[in-house]
Image (cartoon, one colour):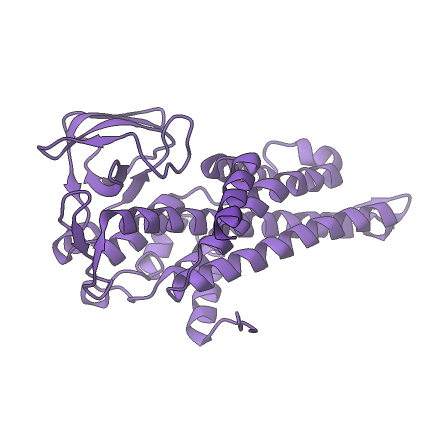
Length: 346
């Protein structure tokens, strides 16, 4: 069965607007908000567009293409998408109207634990340690059950320092309004009864999709910088791009970038249309973590001495790619996850 991944008119307009906004402002996060691009997945009753994962990842890809340092992954992919789908109306009213959202999913030694070690006590407080956490007004925290709870990082018992969130009987509210393990009714999921485990799994899907979309853009941006450089930089009176070895290396980066883009497009299309996206997401994550870092190193190599300059924009792209690889657990981890999934399906 052939899939048509072409963007519709609305999606094309979103990608085009995101590019224009990011290229035309020195305050990109505020500009994205003013353009309505941070509320694409927010329900229409709250002033959003009521769209979904695919439209959100289009914005993330454009951010990645420019390697701009904004809290897009945690706020948009992990935060807004998850609350819009699983939060109660009261929670949506509170969290999707101006608050900055984040997520605490990683634990020491495990980037996306299927069985979190962070626990919930009978009184609803949570205890545990989360890593790779960025500051936000509210955090979505994955807990044993598994389930997702909402935590105020400034609440008693919660301490966020150097990207590590320490929770010691910190007050928490279950996302969806029910205790972990109980049925929840996602306000954006048609009211169908689901478990906290479904919400937890969906948060992980949003995390992988968002990271891959950012990585897709970051590698594409690095390729564009490199292609422009070798076209204009001359050696022995000829552009570098005319040398066979250079052209072959640029072609290798193009293949890696194009393959990543196709893998990400397939994954987010399935996710956005409520199809089983887990296999596609794991493939995209494995390709990003395994192939993007060496492709980025090739881009630096082809820049020569300029590629070593810390103030040259290529460094932002490679730094973003490294951060995303760490967020996803690295190439070996993603290959193990993918292998286990493929073996279990056979």
